[in-house]
Image (cartoon, rainbow, N blue to C red; front, side, top):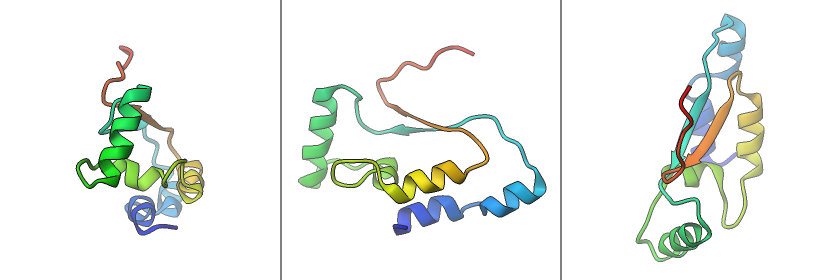
Length: 93
């Protein structure tokens, strides 16, 4: 696992959540990038040039695709973890 994924997954040990039967609602993260094709391209280029940064992107994605170690971590969480882009509109509950 990359260090950023270990930090995220290690914040509260998954075994502790399962052992204590702590139940949470859905969790979510917001990417500091727009979810459009142009927004994704702007972020990718800006990140390569050191002009933009998104901590969630560092945790969840490699150069082009979602990290396998992040998928494994997310799949082990006892809560649903959804991601959104900053321009996504969240539906009212």
